[in-house]
Length: 184
Image (tube, rainbow, N blue to C red):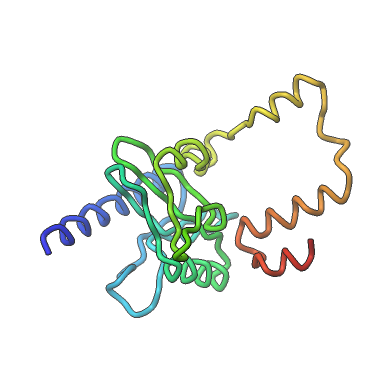
């Protein structure tokens, strides 16, 4: 019981920390009242918006162990985000690290149907807080290589661009994976 209470307090503290950090960067933000198990309605932990983009965020933290989310948690987040008109995001924070953000579709799915984020995955593949808040933009090595080759990106064929648009719609929670598979 003490471990659960302590973990819940730490989770609550981390959620408030995320709310405050988003607020400091100019987001309108609120921690959903009674998120998690305190209500029968499944609500995300945090709602945030900047006037153009709105997010429904499920926040998880860990001392260093992998973070797991149940399939039900992720489905509830996607359902709420879709109906609210927000982008679904999973925010993870490991001790002595910053927040990292993922679209639920980018998470590793276990054989049991749970979702997992390891610390090394968060650091290598997650969207860091400054990028999420619009303060910086991540540049990949392939993009740097294209710039060095003088490719301005203007020669993308229409079929590739259409695929990219469909995948972005899935990533942003605007299109279910099944619909994307039918289109592709």
